[in-house]
Image (cartoon, rainbow, N blue to C red; front, side):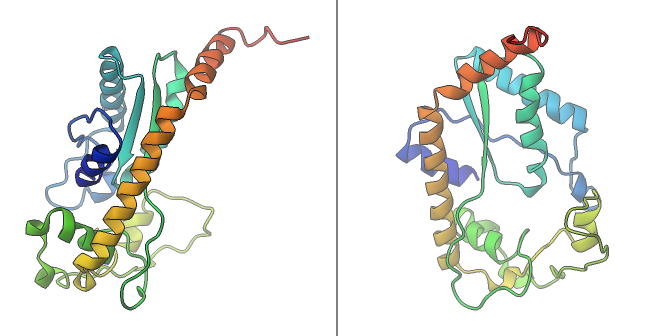
Length: 220
């Protein structure tokens, strides 16, 4: 993710905050080396970090997410900005447009350390990739819980991918990684441009805070 935002910043100027590591990772607590901060601490750290960024003049803060485990935490954090007045706006960005698959189609989900992420890492941090080890564990979907798509349970990830591995990293290629990384860089550049041009969110947020103080003062 750092590689993506640094390259995006070369195309569209922004102030880059240092890499931020305190994300949501409860789903991997069974894996050695996982540091999973409490949900209260995660939210408090995010709040104090963005508050301090705003105190230092950053009134539009874009959180660029590269971790699937944050896809519930970060929208909730952005929504929680409406709890009390803030003089800045939080935006959350993740993902990019699907890129054309190079080679054979994937047999199943490819969500963590599989072909896509390993291909990306071959571009961004090639020294961390050991393709010969990618087949040591299974990244296949175990499908151990059977629920409708509109029913959520927190154990869903472990039920499907107990090795915290989804996909097949052995099929990764630098060519695929270059296509995906460039697509992600372009998506972040578009997001930065859109945020810079957004003059409405701050005004509407201020209007909301004022009305929320007097909800009964409705128009006749």
